[in-house]
Every structure is written in C-alpha cells, then in structure tokens.
Length: 563
Image 1: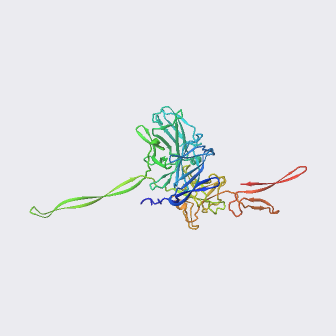
Image 2: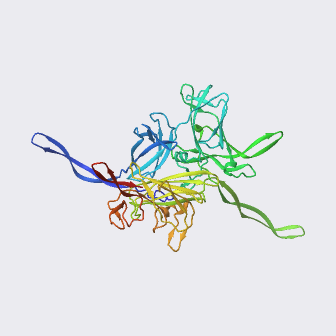
Image 3: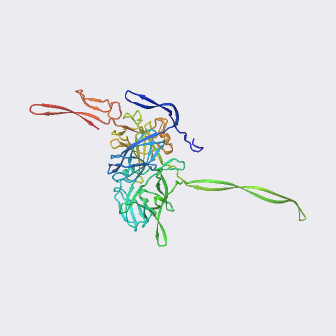
C-alpha cells in the first residue's frame, strides 16, 4: 500500500543483478583479452522495458497517407521518429499503463500536431495504428476585422461556428498583431468515421475517484495561425463557439442551460478537462431579452491561459456543534418583597448547526458500457491468441445522427479486450495486427445469446450491433457481451467463458478437405480450412482448359484461390 487511502501495490519489483566483479585475462595464441567474472549478486529494482510499434498515417477519401519522418515526443522529450512509410518503434522504461504521445513536424508538413494516448502492455510489445489529421487549406482573414467560420467536414452542413474577435492575435513575443491571419483549422466532425479515428487524446476524463470516465463528443477543433511570412501567431482574446442544438436534439432548461460543455485537452494526461457550459444565446430586441431556443454559445479563453482542474457536483451536509454557556440567578424565597436565598449558577447549551456544502466534480455516466472481444489463434475459435492485437470500437448514436466516439484497446495474454462504448447505441468492431499482412476476420456465429442481433460487415472484417446490456443468462450461465462500465474488471478478467465477440487471423491451414465428383470421384476442389472447422472462408477450384490446333491437343489444369 502506498498510503492509507490508495489501494494498489506500491512496492517496486526487484531483479537479480551483478554486485561485485573481477577481471580475468584470457590468453590465446596470438592475442589476449579481458573479461569480467561475477563474484557476487544483489537485488535491485527492475527496469521494465516496453515496446510500442506500429504505423502513423492520415486518411483522405479512404486512402492512407504516411506520416513521413515525423517526430514523436513523450513527456516533452523526443523519443523517436517515423520512417518514410510512417512506421515507428519506441522503447519505454517504467511500468506505466498508458502513455501520451505528441506527433508533429512530419517531413512534408502535411499533418496537424496531434496528441494521442496509448494503453500499453507492461514489459511487452504494444502494436498500435495512429491516425493523425491532415492540415486543411488555410482560411485567411484580417485580424483587425475578426472572422466567423463554419465548422464541418465532408458534405455535411455545419452545425457549429467559431468567431474570432477583432484585434485578438499577438506575435510569439507577445506584441499585438495587425494584418492578415492564415488559419489552418482541423475540425473533427462526429458525423464522419475518418474524423473519429483521428480524434485527439482519448475521449475521456478523470472522475472524482481518479477513474477514467468516457465522454460523448460533438466535435474537436485544432488551430494553427500564421502571418504572411509563415511566423506563428497566438490568440490573446476569448473566442466564441455557436452550436445549433436542434440538429442533435439537445435539451435546454428554463434558464437557457444545456448539458453540453466545452472541454480542454490536458497535454500531460491526454484527458479532457471541463471548461465552460454552453448556454442559449440571448438576443436583444427593444427592451426585452429573448432566448433563442436552438443556438447555444460559449466563450473560451485562449489556451495558453487555461489552468483548469476537473469539477465535481456533490451535496454534503456539514454539522457543527456550538457550545454556549448561560449564566443565571434564582431565589429560593420572596417574603414581603424581600429577596431571600439568592443562588447563582451557569449551564452549557449545545446547538447543532447544519450547513449544506456543494462541491463539483464528474460522476461516472450511467449510460457507459463495455463490450467483450476475444481474439483466437485461428478460425476454429478454440484457443485464444496470446499475441497482442489492436481492437477498435466506434459508437454511433442514431438518435442524434452522429458518432459518439471510439475506443482502442490491445488484447491481453488471454486474447481479451474490453472496450468502452455507450449503452443502447450502435457499435462497430474491428481488429488488426500491426506490421503483419494477415487479416483478422469475425466469427459467423460469435459467442452470443440467440436473440443478440449483429451483422458482419466488410467481408467479415468487422461486426455491427446494438449495444444491449442483457445481464446474466441463467440457462447458459454466462454474462452478456455488453456490461455496464462499472463491471469492466469482470469483463476483462471473467471467471467463466462469458459471451463475447470473436475475431481470428485468416491464415492458410496445412490440411485441405478435398471435394470429389459424385460419378468420377475425381478431386474437384479443396477447402483451405479443415472440414471440421466452422469457418470456411476460402477454397481452391480446379479448372481444366483444353487447347486444340491441327497437330496437337493440349490439356492444362489451373487452380484458383476463391475468397
């Protein structure tokens, strides 16, 4: 225990290492050399080494664009670079469960600076694909006039705008700037799948109890400001975001407040910190102030000045006992108006004062869930794959017609990954092994209750389903593949073979099951999977081609691999 409050193992790990050595000279025929002989050993704190490897790229119309020769920073230090193909490999010491990577300065200057959080496997290799956003075409405007721009990607209509007030920019040395501003703006539109994959940080925050809490995103923005000479500029005044609440059915109370907040990405933790609440826009009409029922607004101070901590909302009662002493005089008897038997005394009176105290923070969302995924060695779906595989879950909210967010996790030694989603929303799952050409495919049946609807997509590369939390099945004695978020530990370390979604690498097996003609009993085709396997994805088809000419008849046999 690290202290009386934290409940985790704080003892360091120890390993055997060399204590005392002595030199030994080895004499050979024509030369000699010195080696070290270990005399004694000692215990020392272990140095855990973890590998992170994978690929960094952007997406444009579904095509990968490599993050060429880009720099990767961690805790402010340069820890590695990507290759021309966007591949990278990092070695990390320590026992961190999650690291924050800053990716910037690619060779072609095509990408935005991006912050990503990576959950790692301690003392092992963590494969990961990182999608970073491409820079957009700069938007130019006069800093003395200010500017309002719509935020949207693809063919979608903008539902939010950002306004920069006039004279709101300064140079890097803090002097007021006057002139043309060229703004490269990246907006992560929650209605686009490619945008969700390139989201900044992790779409989560840290709650009052220190645990990670998932968030529902309505978009993210990132800016780069330059002058005509390419010099960087900084914001020095608050900017205003306007949001059309009607497009996402966001409710507004009588005071004009919504449940929508602006958040700031903490560069150290990779988590989001609450800044301000969106409120209904008040418009001045004559002497009356009218509430606009659809437009929400929030003012955000410039990022360099933000120092916010997470807030929480909690009502507690503080009781204070106050002691008060009363002094008194009384008389035993009064006769003919004479006072007789005067007695003086005192007594202590205790009063309890109750004070209601409101504190602010983040509570775990009641609609947050986790989904269980298991990756197997092959498509027999019998033995789990011990090698780490990256699994991604993308949640889509059909009521608000947008993606709520995504979560990416690596499977553990038992082949299990539990990904954060939102209950009762549509979820897409897919899995990938980094740096390998082998595809991962889903099971035709999965390990699911009979009533659980799902659809395999993209030639069985992924699966879509509605995240229904159905709890415990008493007949099968298994838990649902979707559980509430507070049951995430039971999902990751189940005590039984609970329901789950299944993936496996698609590899060519060594054994074939041939098919014979009914009359000739000749071989017609061969399955690449064994006959007893439930998954038959490919087969070989034998075709005879006959070529005739005047002198010779040639017969040729061809084998085709059919998927």
